[in-house]
Length: 296
Ligand SMILES: Nc1ncnc2c1ncn2[C@@H]1O[C@H](COP(=O)(O)OP(=O)(O)OP(=O)(O)O)[C@@H](O)[C@H]1O
Image (cartoon, rainbow, N blue to C red; front, top):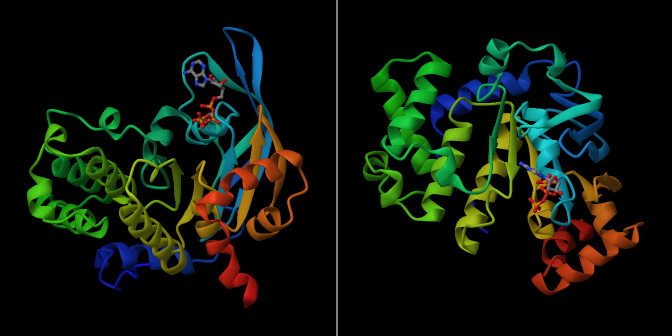
């Protein structure tokens, strides 16, 4: 496992987040309470009541079969449900504010700066006609209100932080010049560029090879532990969740079938479906991540 140096995260990022993390908090940064999501076209409820709370520096994992509602739950928290989908029950609070009360302008201010996300399929989130570095710098310039030169400097630091070699060169490249793994790392850099308090990582490292994935997980763990970044991690990979998350939700067919501390759920699953997920996973060496802490 690689260990990132203190200098991996741009100095400015460390300072700002440290300030945020040590500020007294009165409650969760994200509270999802009995959220229900329906498809208006078919008039079907797809997600049947999901609840979890995220406090600063903590990480919640969401696992479960394809189509169980993990991504919709994340999109609901970000206010970006696909057309025809709507929250039909429960509530989402971001740093104490019910998102149902937010105006489009308030959402724009919140996204990136307070809550941010990385999804799969990075190419669809980046503009092919603008150099990737300039896209990250623009986020920094607008959200952090810094001059172009400073924004560029920080963007290059972020590209380095996500372990892209020759970040100056990558800065000036277009999406078609980069591999899928490189684009995914660019997207992660963009997502943390405005120093959000909450990062939703939906299969964010799935497309990366094992070594790069380990480096990115280390980076996220570092941002979390040192700077108080809170994480929602959606992954089909229980090893990723067990490495990063304090709590885990197991979803199936729009229901949370099990929810609790990651170690307890993965060591002593109560639900048959969780047992099945773990059994399927055994071949990938889940114990490797659980065993060392078990001994301590
Ligand atoms: N844009 C959409 N249009 C139509 N149906 C959708 C859309 N997005 C999600 N759904 C449906 O809603 C259900 C939940 O989808 P969701 O993407 O949340 O699942 P998931 O658990 O994230 O799955 P996966 O692991 O495959 O990403 C699925 O049945 C899916 O087909």
